[in-house]
Length: 562
Image (cartoon, rainbow, N blue to C red; front, top):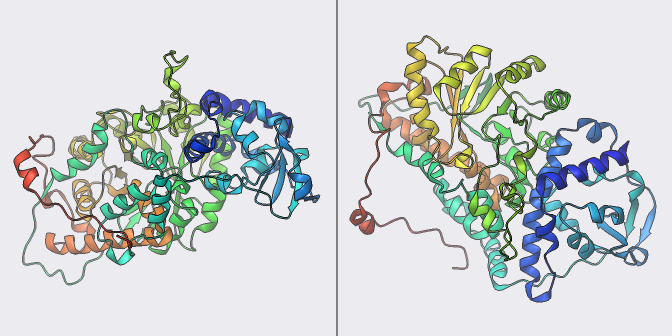
């Protein structure tokens, strides 16, 4: 059974990632070794994400038939003899695996495995794979035993750019110098690899929606009250029955290990310690079990669900989330097709040729490319109703972009929606979520559709406490509102880990307190449409280039050696 599952996952990953030609074309020559290492690492992220999705939606394999490592002791002298394509052993985390039969089926091509034959591949493997991946998919008889001694590692010759990047990581600015969320983004842009930065920061096509997600908040203005006693202000909020210290949450975002070795686990610890809810991505680089285990006692986590074609798999996934203590299910509905994220894709082009791609839509080699490939494209509102019936947890629809769909979610019994366009990474020129919210609330209110207990969350483009307060004011007392932030916490986690996540939360919390005092409110419950002016929200402003040329921006942070 396990061997057939092994073949299934190989075929599945190969079909979804379509990376074999791209990676197998890489030649590990000394003059290009660092670039090749970076490409291999970036490309394998796509493979790992797809493989992770397979195991996420194959709970029986992951939980019931996981193979155990043999107790056999293997010396380094014996191990290094198996260093060829027809005799390929590698070691990861001190365990030895025979990948000879896997080489030709490897979706990443033969070169990466042959290159690591007879070598220790732990660092590269752990950077991108959830715990247990190799143990779960490799047949038991191929998990050979425990290595006694230290195996050789592939020697990487770093180019000047990579040396500078690593040097910057050793000279990060002190947390005390970070003043706002943008500082974390600036630091991440300099210390992440090019592949990781392009993956984190990219949007779809012209990236208009990604930018408008933020710009839309700048078109909403406050109407502050004066002569109000604001000595004491309260930022606490209730999110789906859980008490939170702030009205925002960590939105689901994939591949946190690209920025920090602890990945989503350090985000879980940081968010939990600050009383902030974490939504966990289906494409996390840590396993759901690891992230749940990292959750501080008393803190809350939600799970983001992508709907698989096999409904038995969906049911098992829901049960797994319930057993691990997730408090809500967010069904993602804005990723039925992969977004055309050209910035991410271009970074991974490794060969020049004039041949037409057999399937240009696959966009081979991008981190983003493989992720939504297994999602059920036939999903409709009836399936959402089924999901509601399959779990006792609250079910919300994530990725709603028009008021008609909010109404449908209300009608079928969802406990809420997330107004989201996937951070501008899917359909470019789709509307900014805050605009959808401002348009939808009055319409639904006029129809008598809104219930004060119905949750309308919003994400995308949020960078300031003022952004969060504007969203809550639009919702007012007609529904329950919370705001999600995804990229900002990836950036804060990059380099700084748990401390960076906590610092980002503290910055936003202090902004909220100051902004509430200046707005003339002491509790989030006081926020309503009287606090804001949205008349300019749907308008567009011409750019004043003369003003922009004279504007003196804040000086970027300096690293400690600068």
